[in-house]
Amino acid sequence: MLGLRGEKPLWIVTFPKAPPSSSQGSDTKIKAPLLAVVLWLADEGAYKTIIKEAKGQDKNDFRQTKKTDFAEEQVSLPISKVRQKLNSLSNHQIQIARKTLAGWVCEFYHLMAKDLMIGFFFSNRDLVKISQNQTSFLLKAMGLETAYQGKSIQQAHVALPPIRKGQFFRRIELLNQHLKEKKLPNPLIHAWLEFERSFEHVVLS
Ligand code: HEM
Image 1 (tube, rainbow, N blue to C red):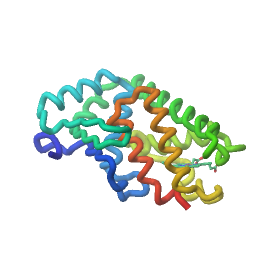
Image 2 (cartoon, rainbow, N blue to C red):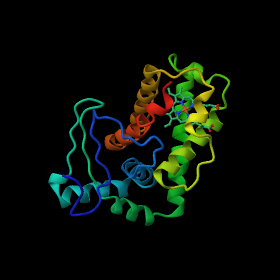
Image 3 (cartoon, rainbow, N blue to C red):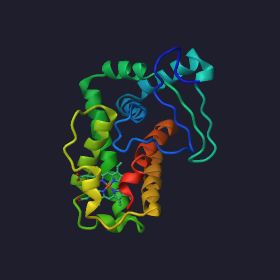
Image 4 (cartoon, rainbow, N blue to C red):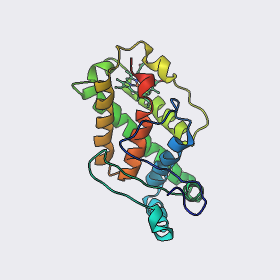
């Protein structure tokens, strides 16, 4: 079930499932699918080629079933292929991916700030600055940046009103809707959401 012909699987995403144990996003199971988000942003065609190749190579290894938003979904791809494709992209394409990601994250923070349920957390905050740091945080988790200059997650939230479970999941749902609007493929949305969910125990009061 795992991996293609001995290669390391790019990801296995199964919903619903307990969130990954890592609280800092350093786990390779979390990083790997996020890397595929960069590939999709940089070159959608290259991402689709990888999917096609994976399907062609071993049909039993590629399963994708969709029932509901958080329905069970399984995808496995070799991380080496994604890295290989990323390495063949131009700097310009990677820059486009970074810029697009930064734009999406900034829009997401503005959506959260307007939300009736969680908007109050963001009043009088510098949304652009926070979103820039959040983008850098994501890029580090994706393996595209070696350093993250912003606050640690604990530090960032310590002075805020307590964040409750319902509020945490409201953020996840807003991100889900946002990424759907951007037409990011489902497996990549689920991977990104799983990354966010892995911080539940760090963020909740
Ligand atoms: C409902 C859930 C959440 C709320 C309401 C929330 C709210 C906030 C707010 C208001 C800030 C700015 C703090 C400041 O100005 O100093 C912040 C910063 C930050 N948040 Fe969250 N957050 C939530 C969940 C998360 C999650 C799940 C992650 C990680 C994936 C995360 C990562 C960060 C990071 C890295 C920063 C620091 C940015 C910086 O250095 O400026 N947050 N958050």
